[in-house]
Image (cartoon, rainbow, N blue to C red; front, side, top):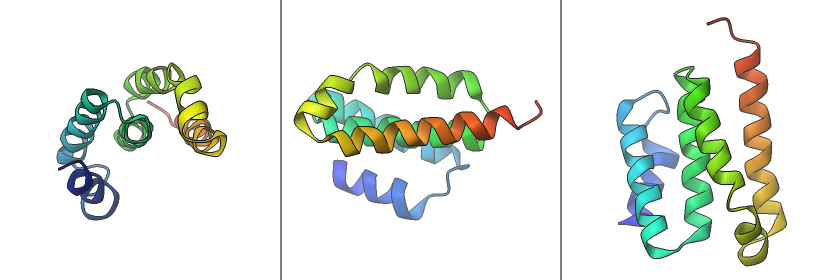
Amino acid sequence: LKIIIANMVDYIIDESDPQYYELSSEYLKIAKNTGDILSQIQAYNSLIEYFEEIQAPDSATHYMLEGFSIKDSVITNISTLRYLWFTNTCFEVCRVLALTDF
């Protein structure tokens, strides 16, 4: 189920679609329940991109902080590069949202 959801989020559903949020949230829930750190950071990344797309900076910030909270686990169990990928997404989303008039 986790792989199916990940593929739908990555390849099928547009980031502005409300189903994108629902599937990303379900992906995060499954990842947390199974202790899958890689899937958790991927789900946080998807949620951040969704909130960038719908221009909801407070919600994007919430998931950035959640992702930052698992930094040590990502670096230790996955890789430093994967964590840097996540932080790059956060940086780009902050940059885009800062340039947007609300």
